[in-house]
Amino acid sequence: MIWALFVTAVKALVLILALLFAFAYITWIMRRGLARFQIRLGPNRVGPFGLLQPIADAVKAIFKEDITVARADRFLYWLAPFLAFTFALAAFAVIPVGPDGWVVANLDMGVLYVFAVGELAVYGVFLAGWASGSKYPLMGGLRSIAALVGYELALGMAILPVVLMAGTLNLQEIVEWQRQHGYFIVYQFPAFLVYFIAALAEMSRTPFDFAEAEQELVAGFHTEYSSMKFVAFYIAELLHWIVGSALIATLFLGGWDAPFGLPEIPVLWLFVKWAIFIFLVLWIWASWFRTRYDQMIRFAWGVLLPVATVWFLITAYYVAKGGMA
Amino acid sequence: MSVMALAKALGITLRHFFSRPVTIPYPDAPVPLKPRFHGRHVLTRHPDTGLEKCIGCSLCAAACPAYAIYVEPAENDPENPVSIGERYAKVYEINMLRCIFCGNCEEACPTGAIVLGYEFELADYRYADFVYTKEDLLVDTVGSKPQRREAEERKKPVKLGFEVPYVRPELEGVKYE
Image (cartoon, each protein chain N blue to C red):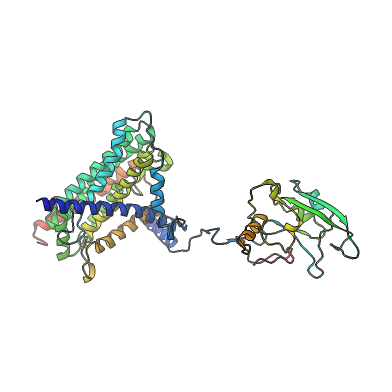
């Protein structure tokens, strides 16, 4: 018992360190990648190819002055970044990176857990917006809630056919199912599309990044945050991107399963599939516009949700007739 | 249709992703300049005789809208002339802090002696160091004053931060690299 707890704790620690490392270098990938999309070079001064830039950024952030706004609700203002940061980190715990044992928590309700933790992270955003006592963060928080109302149903609806077909909420078993029958992106392409679009909103990435629209809201919900509190939000935001990409890869692209009969290496194949979605999101980020939040809600309720529902009913009918048993 | 437009946008950015960045990492890579760029002035010489073209007429100083030029002429020694005319510029100074690099001096010059070159890295520390004398401007001098000072301290040749497709003919005798 104690031993199992110890092993889980070590796994969790490794995962947290890996995620923080991934965060540090995702900032580098983001800045270099976006720069290349805009025919620029991006940061290349600190270290070879600018690879030490994240470390320089971290040092800079630590030594920044930590400001609390006079009108802020002190406790919530302090709590919000920790909520956002903690739940963004926690979501990855159920995503398997390899066969049995290569997951921190092999939960039977893994999909539900991811959803629950993902929604809690939004509390960080909207508490920050409320507690800052300033109008721009308030608008940013408001918009993120509006986005939540929009994408959440579509996201849930898009995942139901997958769960229905695999017959389990356990992510490890969903991957096992895909290993036996083929990836869900083939069987569930409409669900994949809806899920991907809704996930863009969940990660608050372009075209649904209106919660922190610089042109209108300065920086959105984290306008009044500085120093490490700002970093906590930044980490949370990019971790949503990291975790969201890993989750799509797990649900629709077979997770850690090696494609085309290539040798099985834990972590590697999930990493490759994850990188595809990281790139895809970055690509969209560099290419597209930003929607208004009412447009986004209209789209989510008027297009995504009906499509997902119809597809869910089709899948349910198919499964009920005994297909893919 | 709008979906096609979105796809087109993705295509454009992807093409950009695989094209060469337009950024010039300036101190590491030279800046490409146009041949008619207005940079630091050069006092040219006649290439065959090696005599200075400047005859000390001060027309450049008169034409200068910023009063950046000071010329003090002197009579040529007939045995050992400095320039081809009767007089030459004993003192020729341009204050680079005043100069607006308009090129009026070049247009006013009757002998084509003063020509704007390409060097633009003129940043220095003291006001006095921005006054460029004849030695700093004459055709064989390569680099600005701070550049030459640094090159001397480091015992290395002056490294110029630009490249031009060709040197325009008015800059007679000027060689870069």
